[in-house]
Length: 396
Image (tube, rainbow, N blue to C red; front, side):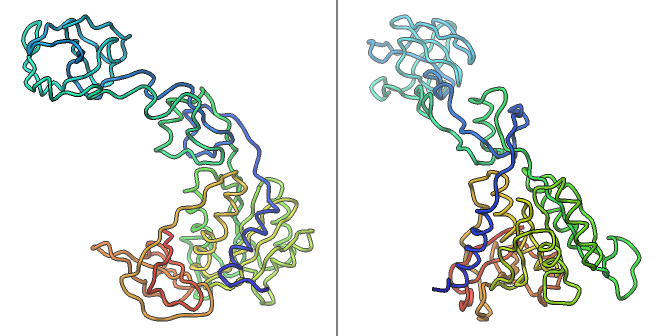
């Protein structure tokens, strides 16, 4: 049975992914772990909080005592000090995060007191106070031995707090994925260079380099332009195989006489896993394995490059990185649809206006790099649909 077109895209990614192995592992200081992919679970080495602590600045006391409205202040408990023992009928001044004194069962906010030298007067009835009030209990966030972050997760800015609080001095992570970018085409000139009318400045190389630089678990090893000859493509592939885990090419994957990427891969012993997928833009895209390395051939048009790099390239690079989480995509609703539909999975550029509304971008097609530059991302419209229902959004 033939897969639905949207299923064929996912199947192509899966088929190629199964032929790839994650890169090697290494240990890094936890101060350098941000942005890396964990190669082991992060386990809590102690409870959080480690002891009962105060959630407020105030006064610790024992409700089970028969308390007068005014209490003698026994001492002060600052954060970072060892726990004290509360004397019956007394209060201990306490700061946020300080360990609750032994024997105390409640913390009264400082705002609910009147302070006197050596004494504190409670301004709320004792009957309205509750056991455990304003106390963060030992282990309420997590217990000792709990799994905080899973192997294969990326250490984001939000999760670095757990690494710093519970991790060892160094962590086992996957090393960064080494990626080379090869841009084929005799018509290409260096960005910023003077060009003839029949030449174009290379925008695909900078686009991919900029995208890869946002992936903290990737290192770009090389970015070069390659002439439209079989020998040039062969030589570039062979050279980059020695120093890269993945090679991303642009151009040279379609049906033209100078599209040498498929032949170059096969001549070097590579296996082409998929070539041409039911998508727009980017239908000629190619995925292959050569000596265990990922080879991804993207079409030459700039919108095709930007879209297929995210749709196909990112999940495959995540497999190499040991990452077991998918790139975030949002389910959204377009403010309006132009009603167009095609029999392919359609990735359409979008913009967000000042009111937060998502609109289709005005685009002249896969070569419209101006529209690409002005867009905020793209939505995925399934075959035969017109974008009037929920769609998946990928932001640049």
